[in-house]
Amino acid sequence: MNIVYIITRSDVFGGASVHLIDLVVGVKNNGISVTVLIGGNGVVCKRLKELGISTISIPSLKREIGLFDDFRCYFDLRSKLKALQPDLVHLHSAKAGMLGRIAAKSLAIPVVYTVHGWPFTDGVSFLNSTLEFA
Image (tube, rainbow, N blue to C red; front, side, top):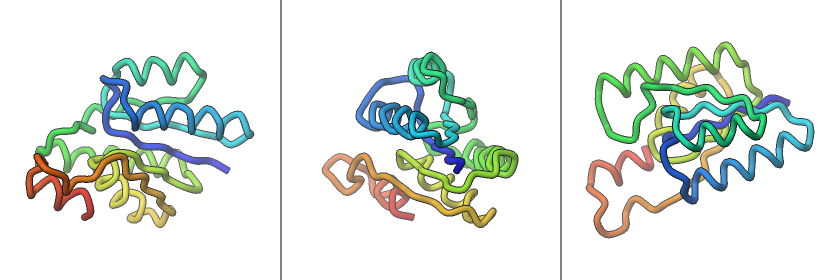
């Protein structure tokens, strides 16, 4: 089995990134092929590589909403998924969740999405809360 994990941020350790690291190490240790596609090339990316996890930086995968970068990111993710041919794509964080689902579904790859926060809590804009569940 071959699983590709996608997460938006590599610049900070937080709940989603810690969960992802624990998950991919456990899955890899059980003989499953794993690759992480990650936005940027920060501390999370460095840690994954130290642990021997195949990690590919996707520079267009950014937390902020931006039409040009998001459009490009979709094609970057789709291209990587097509090359990697995973049996499953597991998504973490809102931006990776949205763009990753669209890219994976366009290639008929099954998808799992883990929610790491609730977008409808106080202080979250209408646009961001809407996009979280798109």
